[in-house]
Structures are given as C-alpha cells and as structure tokens.
Length: 354
Image (cartoon, rainbow, N blue to C red):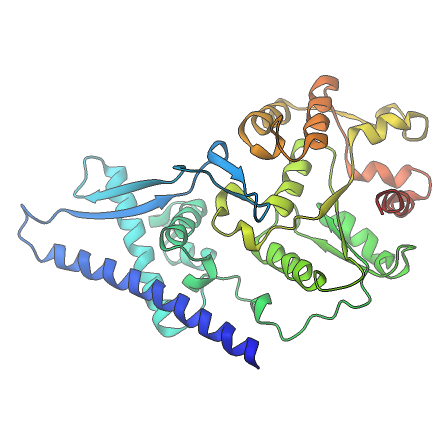
C-alpha cells in the first residue's frame, strides 16, 4: 500500500506541473490577443531535442542523454514572417488546447487520435508526434504525463508481474520470427529454462521499452540473474534497434534513463556468424547492402557515441565496419536452414554467452 500511495502522489505532482505549464501558456496567449494590433505579438517557445551528434552515454545510468549545451529552443511567432511559421504556431496552440482538455478531464488520448481530429490541418502524423515529444521535453515530463498514451494500462501501475521461473528474456526484432518461436513453445522448453519472448515489431515503442525495463528492475533484486538477449538481423537497422533497447533513442533523451536495458546482450545475427560456417549456410546466406544501408552505417559510425571508436560497443562498431568492407548483411530467417534450425542456433548461442 505504501508504494502505491507514493506512486499516486508522484503522478499527481507531475500532472500539476503539466497543467500549470499549459494553463500559464494559454492565459498568456489569450492576454496577448486582447492587446491592440501593434502590441499583439504572440510567441511560443519549445525546447528542441538534441540530435545524436550532441548525445553522450551517461556514466551513471548507461543511457543515451543530451550532452552539455546540446539543448536548443525554438520560438514561433504570430504574426510571423513566413506562412510556415504561422502554421507551426497554430499547430502547437491547437495541440496545447487539446492537451488542456484531456489533462483537466483525466481522459487519455493517443497521438493518432490527435492527428485525426483534423488531418487536413496537421498535414502528417509525424508533425503531431514531433510537437507532442517537444512539449513533453519542454515541460520535463514523459509523454504519458500529458495524458497522451497508447490507451492501455501503464505497466508501472500493474499490481504484480510474476517472473520467478523466468531465466531469460529474448527481445526479437521481427514479428514473424517471434511467432515462429512462440508456436513451437520455445520459451517453455528451452534448455536454458523458461523464458520470455518479446517483440517490438521493429523499432520499439515506449510501451515495449517500459515493459522490458520493468522486468529489468524486478530482476535486479533476484539472486539468480535474469539474462536479456537481443535477436536482430545482421544489418544496420537491426543493430540500431538493439541499441534503442539498450541505450535509448535520440528522440526520447529525457526518458532513456528509465527505459534502457543496460545488460542487454547481442545474441546475433552477425555477418561474422555466417562467414564462420559457409559450408552450412551456403553462399546465398549473405545479401548485398543497399545504398540506403551504406548511408545508415556511415551515419551510425560518425554520429552516435554508441558506435564511436572510444564508445562502449566496440564489437558492434567492428561488425558495422565488416558490413561495409564486405558489402554484406544477413537476415535472421537464414538460421531456419542451419543445424537444429533457429531454435538450435539460439540454444548454442545462449550456452556460449552464459
């Protein structure tokens, strides 16, 4: 009961800061509209999230965070010099008005719901997504504090998650691979003991990351450690997805510390795994990189502290460089054809990493 009371208190205080910010901002704008035209210059300022080149790995949390002086502020005016700036001003104002309503009434709303209130006005879903994230960053809260959610219960409010029999968690990039393992009940009959299979269907949303972090925090009190593994394609996107789980994303720097999984281990797939057993998987196991893949790898190597030459993941860096050098990548599905199939490969790799 005590922990639940503390949690409720924290949520109330957080909601109060949100309502205070929105209320003061809207009152200031309404007051500006009452002034005569020469004095009626309205402005809205939002903090802009840092890009990956301005990020660092926190020595305390191990998560991706904004570096010193990485934060910038963008101010939108009305009337403005350009039609775009006036439109962006009204977009922020419109979203603030929507958030004012849902926070006062205690309702939940999704980013998608906000966009479909007036898709012609907002133009694209990513416009709404960016404004919501910038407003949360400006206020210093997570998105859920704005009552913008996935319309499912927040995992941190769950009464209990029973994981006493769970020995490992496998985070899988692809939904099809997840279903293949689930259909064979691999999570129950694995040699390593019972486990959990989780997929974010590619790049994970906040709910998936929050669920995994909840498991990570619960496991920190156990005598027997809970091992976290990632199974991704051996390509730049697979490695970037794994990094999002372990270190966080540049889009949510202010939330990464509570969402990251510091002990996540890369199970595979690596290009080097395929090269090591060419007689088993054959010459067609490797695919050629696309131009987009090559650009992605170069951007990752030069723009993120995760893959820097002095960064925490030198093996990941070497694997990215190997992809560039060999012009090659690999997909998880090729493991269906190896000895023992996908399940056999996972068994062997888990045994090696214990």
